[in-house]
Length: 240
Figure 1: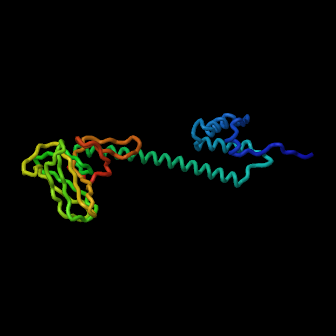
Figure 2 (figure 1 turned 90 degrees about the vertical axis):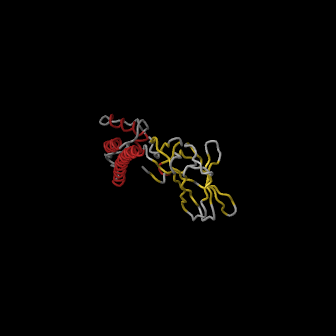
Figure 3 (figure 1 turned 135 degrees about the vertical axis):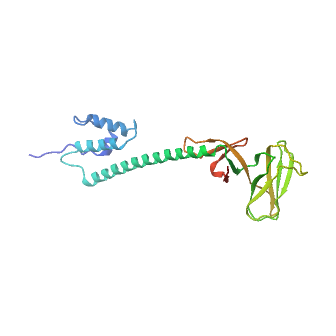
């Protein structure tokens, strides 16, 4: 008497592709696992293990699961578990980073910083210090300071400069030596390179009013008094 095999072995691909396969012993587990695999929720390590166990229960006893393929599936399960653990670790690191940002932000409010910009709120009763970025050695550079109406109140000759940051000090006085009113002033630095007029970047002082913390992992933004926002990474100096 011969035995004719009319069945075929199941593998994970069969189960993933055919959610209608059911057995008397594993109907609930298979249905739950295939729901995960077909998009109702992400296929996690528990659902993967259910699929694997269900496959073993339903394999053809005359053609058992190939050892090599079975080991490969176990390796896939191990990789899936490792990725899940890695995701949990990264989530924890992101949470710690956000907490660190919040702590850092609270210490910056009310402090003075120097950041790129062309405007500054100036108390002319005392001197202010800023810097001008010089891209290359130049024979001369100038800094013009204008009031809120666009009128130039002071021109500072920076002289010849090497590449780098050139510091300047404004004592709050105009070209005639008279102290001007406190308020918001614009700063425009320029030089000549290869017979071409070139505008230069200025770094000016400002006071931090508040801080905006990104909820999506973005950069910390400093809200400067009367001047708008600037990214923390662009700040050159943090003072008292």
